[in-house]
Length: 86
Image (cartoon, rainbow, N blue to C red):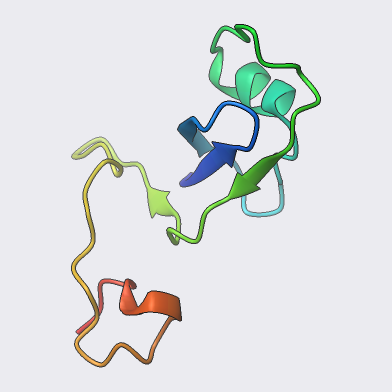
């Protein structure tokens, strides 16, 4: 299942969340419910934004996240040239 990075606008936290491509997390409450994280002091309805990190697939051979992607050689295949191709 792909993983996506979400940033909470209220607390600045970036959280990696695994979910189907057809799903979308919209609030801090969605993130906490999906990941089992404690809500803390952040209101449940605080908006989150999915970051343009692509989405990694978690497999039994690796975590699928936390690795920085190298910049694309061309810089033209994606915004910021950070697609990892090249």
